[in-house]
Figure (cartoon, one colour):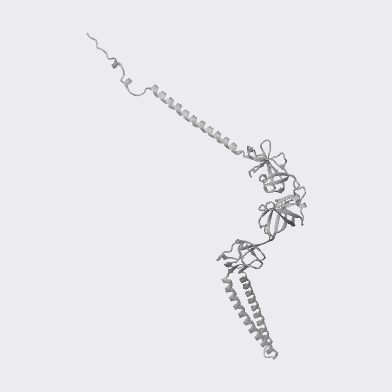
Length: 402
């Protein structure tokens, strides 16, 4: 009897021929995805930590300012004292209107030489004209009433002598004359006042000089008594000039009235102008530590200009000693000037100094610094004692100080 043949393929389970992954593959994929996620998270954390560290380093570097230092240089004496001065006109007057009106004409412009009493501008003031006309009419009325009262009083006085009227009536007429006379005088005063106001419509130069400013424009309204407005004209007497200088206290005892000095101006290199010290304030300013003095100089050539800057040379012996620093190294303060000195530990010390001479770009220090000090040039206003700073690398092309 034949045995039935078996089919090997029939022994396998149908699930074995399905297309889905088995459990091992799924586990491997899940583990791989977790590893990738952990790696991404770790990379992000590491990047953030590095960025934070970089920011902290940048902030730490930024908190330490970079500065440049200079060394004081010795100033040799022998050439006297040189101080900055301001030149001003011998006399200067701002011309303003004393009455309201409109500018009809202006007859002088900037740079014009004018004489005392010369008309600079003419204003139109119709209100003043009408008020003056009314005041004159009132005065004429008052004068007519006065004359009538005088005639009546004279007539009553003569009749009183003949006993034609009583003493009371004669006194009343005399009193009426006195009252009418007072009214006439008051009307005359009003006319004179308005005449003066009308005269103010003509602006004149108070003295001979040069017109240094003009703001008058044709048709512009002028309001008297407004301090905020610009003056219509400014006239300056420049035949002789005043020069104001602040002398440090250390030299204040060596300057006196009658002392001769020399002026030098940047627009006239190599040329000097003679000046004479005329007066002194005889008082030291508490803030600047200097005494104000005035010099005068002839200006026949017109080379000296109001508002100009000049160097004033005083023949004072021993005025050159001290140490010179750039003016930018000095920190101004209410309690006096100071400098920022850098120590060997990289920390700053603010030190009070005494300025013996201000030479513009440089200053001469008499007290407060030593030749071996390292002084910070152009220090920040916020710098304080104990601050740490970093010195900038020297510029190879830069010239040494002094």
